[in-house]
Length: 127
Image (cartoon, rainbow, N blue to C red; front, side, top):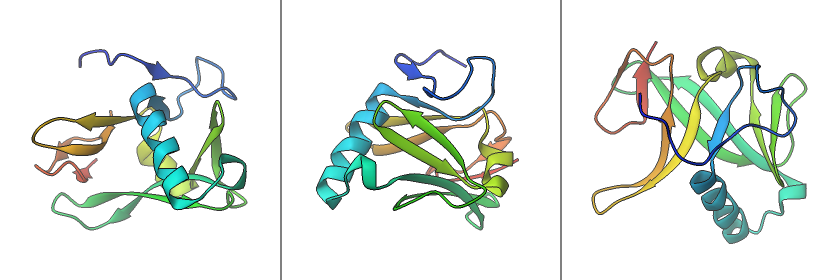
């Protein structure tokens, strides 16, 4: 796998821990989307998760949430918080969230080391 430029480790995690990483491009896009939705970083964060379904068995889920839940893992990237529930963490630890903008596609890209097969749209995978 090629190394991505601008991959950020969470501020609240040791470099040796396997958590969720975010690229600078994704962080910039998260800030833009939060501003568009009228959500201040201090008032919420980005929730990453997985759910059953999709063409490969599991689908990525991404949305804004006001607060972390009791058992969530919270990753801090400068002013942005990312929430991951315990079930999703099993499939998402070690992944990188990137943002891609090309002539053919624009959107968040999940680079997941646990994905053994993914679909063409990139929003579904199997582990």
